[in-house]
Length: 372
Image 1 (cartoon, rainbow, N blue to C red):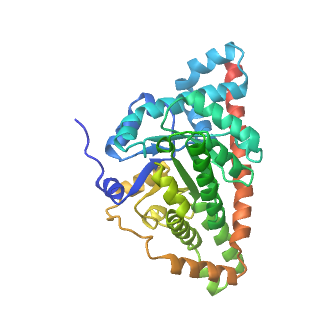
Image 2: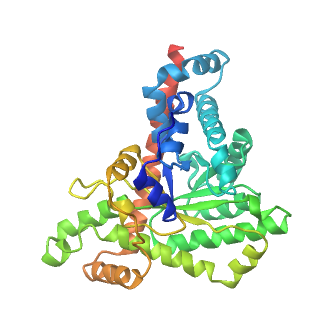
Image 3: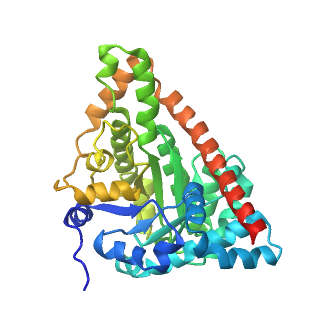
């Protein structure tokens, strides 16, 4: 007997928010749990990162043991083993999501896999590895994750220009988001000029929400004034809402109208890092406050379960908020908190954290390979 869909998550979907899961492991795939989440939790896609894969391989060693042993005995090095394990999981997850992909007209049913974060400042190497990952996974509903660093922006253009769908990651400011949109539209133009079918190319722009509040609130607490205290927990939502305004502006441009006329689909803003870091905040804050038709929200399972347990009715909480969001940042700037500096700090730390996670994944796999 099939369990009925969770009403809150279904209502969120019907409000135009595409619910994705920020987690993946082989047990979820092989046990049928992932397929069940599609049916009962309205999950329409998956995002991954090195931390997720490290946790999956560490906690689910048995599920990976046979393949890992075979690769190790065949003489594969650590990075080759990682690539085989992770691309196999992503390919399998893409197959699970194939019905969603088809039913949504290729919009959803997407599974993301990340380029080695050590390449975040190497344009050419990022392009090369993105093409390799796309070829290895070999599924039309994959997304290749590329960071929105200055060096990553031309990679995004070239990879999209090659007909490859991209998840742009590590976005922390409105200005960088606008640069990502420019890279995306330049990539579509390049793809069109090269003869690619634009209707087959999709992209999301992953804006990291909770990390902004963590950084800004730390600065506000250091200031310690009543004015600073009144702004705690406001920066991330305000920035996300301004990103949505920039998204709408991009869709109104003549450049976009021309690309849309040639079959292109918009690059959807994706709210990432939506698990709250401050226990004083409601667990569903970064979902409830960013509801708008046409976005994606990728949630860790704890956040997904909190939303599922809520009896709140999802309503648009973004449209019409631009002036209030601008005012929030004017007040933050008046206290000496620069959005540009916050963004630069978070990007630098984000790349470093992803590299640390990648190195931890390499250690986990290397250790397991030695024991094979």
